[in-house]
Image (cartoon, rainbow, N blue to C red; front, top):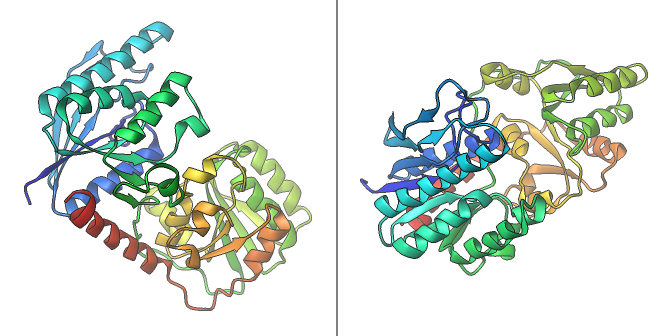
Length: 378
């Protein structure tokens, strides 16, 4: 199939650190982009993302298009390497203006264009759609006016772009009813990637638990996980890897290990095959972020998919976006946000029974690619 799909997002090539972008967003954009190609289309990724303030090696970056191979290419906007409060505004304004004129020149009437929803992109997308009449597929990961409003003006733009969208890609089932249940849509929780089996848990009497991810006291996932160790016996070992508020975490681990029968091991931050091997040596992955906060309505915990894709069983708080998902039967839930409850959910799992979360992730992957081919991009 020769049809090209334009996919607009604030994106940078992983590892470059030139343009404003989110690592979590990049991971999902990469997955959706690969799925578009697997569905039989060509992918044109378009990034109007502006340059970080720290970029100072040259004053102006020209628009560039690169062939990524495998029916994929990427276009980056031109931009200035300004820094400072007022010049930063000019830098952002220029990138958004660039996107508007890019669409005026390149978008076609009724052409299907995917846009990764961001408050910044609303205005140029709305203007360009009004003129060029393209078909807008809006990928919504969260409702920014609910979670982290930039300004009342952007909140109004967000409502307008939801109304203007012709179809949606949603991050949770809850968003379907909240925004667009009357329009074509597809729910994609995250990256449905299955990792190659690089390691297995050691054949011992120990049950190895894992928390992998950002360490912070706001969502408190790592802190909730280590507190559950107090209520587990010597048959369990809890492994923690990640980055963030490490010093605070390590201090609390020392205090818990002084009295707890279940010992906790912190092994820093890992990536690539080292990360996969480390995780696959464990039996159970813990998704233990706080069970309160508006972000839970629209944000599916990506670590659940990651754990399952590596073959781990998953313990999670019984939050709506997970409980109402297609994979809820694969999850071991706890109902109350207390360490004792997390420990009880862990203790109910028999790691000797057959389990293969990888099959569930593989099925979601196949369904999504087919959904793109026959519904969203048809």
